[in-house]
Amino acid sequence: MSNHYRLNVRFDLDDEAQRRAAEYLAELNNQKCKSRNRFIVEAVISFMEHQNSDRDFTLDDVRQVFREELSEVSFVAPATVEYMTADTELTEEQRAENDENVLSDLSAFF
View 1 (spheres, rainbow, N blue to C red):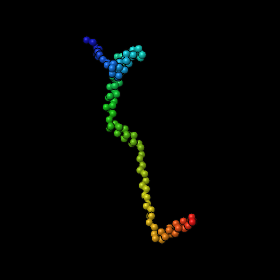
View 2 (cartoon, rainbow, N blue to C red):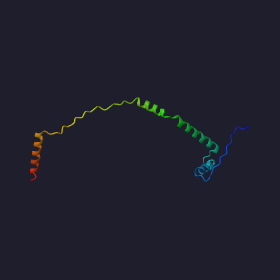
View 3 (cartoon, one colour):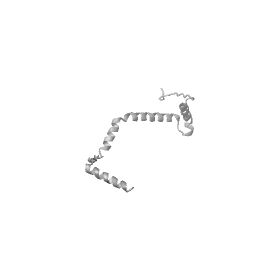
View 4 (cartoon, helix red, strand yellow):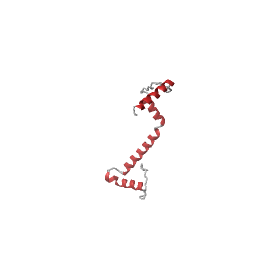
C-alpha cells in the first residue's frame, strides 16, 4: 500500500480564472523552480489558515480589545455652560429714545 494520495484536477480553459490557474501551474516548474505539488500544498494550507483565522475573530474579541485599550484612557466631560437669554423688550422710554436717535441720524442725510 502506498503512502501517497493522488488527486487529478481538470481545468476548463474557456473559464478565465481556471485558464489563468492552469497557465500559472504549467509555468511553475520553469519559472519558480518550485514543484506544482509543493505549491498546491502551500496554497491549500494558507487558504485553510486564513479561513480559520476569520472565524476565530469575533465581535466579542473586538469589544475586548477596545475595553483593554480604553481602560488606560481618561475621559473628561465638558463643563456645563449656562447661557443667559438677552431681554430684547424695550420700555416705552427706550422706544421713544430710539425713535429720536433714528430721526436724528436720518436728518444728517438731508
